[in-house]
Amino acid sequence: MKKYLCFDIGGTAIKFAKYDQAGKRLTPIQTEKTRLSETDNFIMETVLNIIRHEQDKLDGIAISTAGVVDSERGEISYAGYTIPAYTGTKIKAQIEEAFQMTCHVENDVNCAALGEFYSGKVASGGSVLCLTIGTGIGGAFLSEGKLFKGAGNRALEIGYMQINGNDYQELASTSALVKKANALFSRTDLTGRQIMAEVQGGNEKMQALLEVWIDNLTAGLVNLIYVLNPEVIILGGGIMEQKDYFKPRIEEALLNQLVSPSFNANVQFATLGNEAGMVGALYHFLTKEGCVS
Image 1: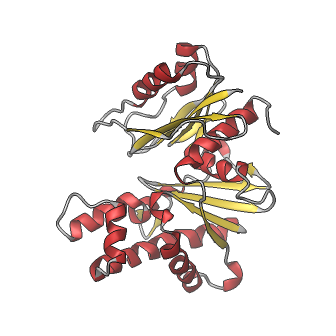
Image 2: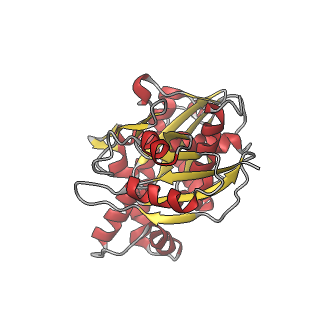
């Protein structure tokens, strides 16, 4: 049985686990905090150390990562302010040189979309827009099961989309919500999970803050619907695990903001949770190696 070590690298955490070729996870998901300074990151140091401890009997390394990815070279073409000094990182080359083992790299939101597709959660036909809401906001677009990547692999970098003079992710990412909640309540320790607990516990100020956040999130979705006309929108990221709370509110906000209900899309939520990026990274790896079509 072939085994692959799969990573999901983000601005907050680096997740990893081993999978077989069928996409079955063989080990528990482990997490390392993403070490960052104001001017640098220690991502590759962390990743190389993990591989060093996990490399026995592996058949490849599959990487899902934040940033604009040149998937042919396996390197970061561009990374924004959430991960300092990540631009230009040669992930594939460093791993293959260090371990003499094949590595393939793809953008994390592209991987999340591919993971949902590979697991059979997304229909093979049609058009699917996938958003992950976390430290920033990332996007991916699948048409007939194929990624649309644009010139220079820069399509769907929607976190930088302008909403009322602000980056979309400055208004509607989880980190933006956490920042505003901490400022509103003069705290520094609130997390997305704690905010949702306060909201569901009846905290009216927190509920009002979240409603504004949902309106900002929806404003971006409306623009994307006008441009891409997707059949399905999949929302992922830790906060979106609160599906029962968000689904009716986002659907109502979409109807309120769209010029006509005829533009609407079917809003769904990611089903793979923490595994989406890693499963998608595996699917990308197997596709590049000719193991799947």
